[in-house]
Image 1: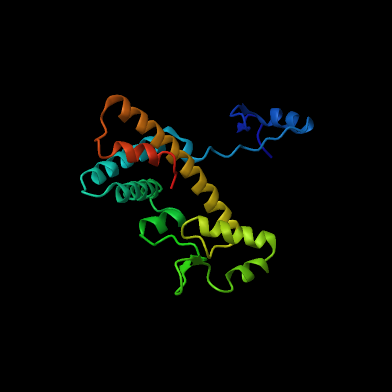
Image 2 (image 1 turned 90 degrees about the horizontal axis):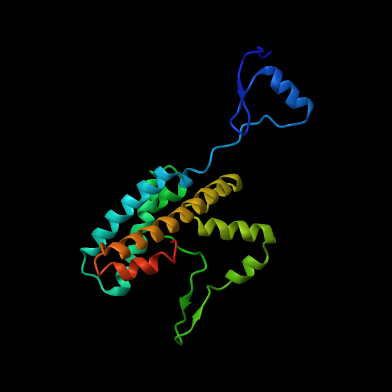
Length: 202
């Protein structure tokens, strides 16, 4: 039994005693503690990622790459900075840091005869035979790096964290682009690709 003067915290963060909790239960109010906000929504995490991203962009800016390759290098650097911010604590961040290529299973291949593209034989048939839910789960596992062989609960957890991380990435890149363009601090070789990269989270 909880002592009368023993404090407890409800979802609003207000401290209550056992008497208060008993009254709340009679009224049918919940006393469950609300889970903390996603780590990707904290100011500290935003600052850490922004710092890592800026360092990565500076390294890319010192390389002699054509415009098309530079844009890809910036996207890769942004993703690796995001994974480094997660410290490899998730499946998707570990996959990015390990440098494993992210590929779709049904990659298009060029036919030997002409210049057309086509899917591997039997790919569409095998997908059409799957239940709708299973197809969506399979697609989700392809979109989240390193998560193809995870169970559904683990996949959903990884996907939720990955989406939150991408949302933070977009916010950080947008803010950084605005600051650099306003202050003129971004090298000319980086600024165009940085502006375009803010539109593409990964």
